[in-house]
Length: 226
Image (cartoon, rainbow, N blue to C red):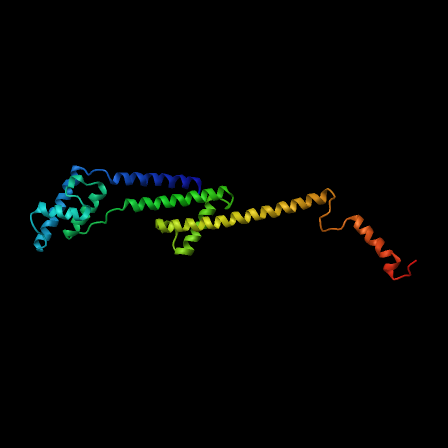
């Protein structure tokens, strides 16, 4: 993932945190009015089925408490309002979209941002040729492990991809360190040869001369000793 995508992921993470903060913001008078109208329809439906006990106020307070443990529409936050209106719509027999889970959405964006950050860091270490190369590697992990692309993974699945990517990066780092050590040893040997110092296992010229003298002695050739 390039630096532009990494910055975009970080902005998305900041936006997700802002969404989470907004989820606790108080509801507006218009939202209170809409929720009361929906609750009234739900009460009518449940009464017709013989499932509503007591007055409307008693029933809607009990229903609201079941959903978010509050008994007044005016004390709800935005996320609680979404949960409550979905619940009353269901009691009224009307289809309603499920409330948006801002926490789960923000969690996934944070996991995506962390993966993007790792891809950028590993490219800086030259463990991959570029951030996009690291991202492509992460994409291959996602398809191998989960059979789906990165964009369709959950926060937990993205974290598992990130863990696997870090393990592979450590292996690459270890191989690179081993190759550097081997290269240093080869460089030292080459330097010794350039300055005329033979390797430790090679015989010196004096050792070669002494060996030839020993071979030319009469006793070494089996001749008579004097």
